Image 1 (tube, rainbow, N blue to C red):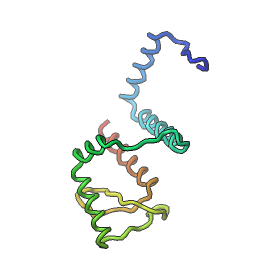
Image 2: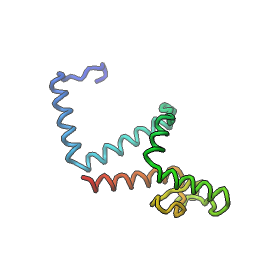
Image 3: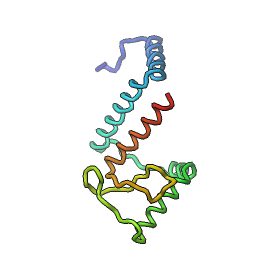
Image 4: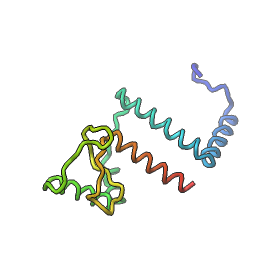
Length: 135
């Protein structure tokens, strides 16, 4: 509420939270819509400069340790670009400046060129597909 109070007792609030958790575990459509809502909220924060995120070294070290195949593919693409074996292209969807996207990391030079916006959207699609398969 506007005054900072919820107009519910703690027990009722806990009960409502537990019901929402159960819904989340059972309803994939609700879960996906919540993820979409949170992504939109984060995008608005970033646009307004309120969310100054940066990757901490510990996070990067952990990611590199957990994803050696991805790291190897990224290095191979960077080297291929440097030595002229492949050339950077514009985004295959909108034509803006693009970055490399791997559909399969076991084929490191089999890449699609996507701008950061479409690259992020593609990863959202992939992650949602994996999530639906696990439900």
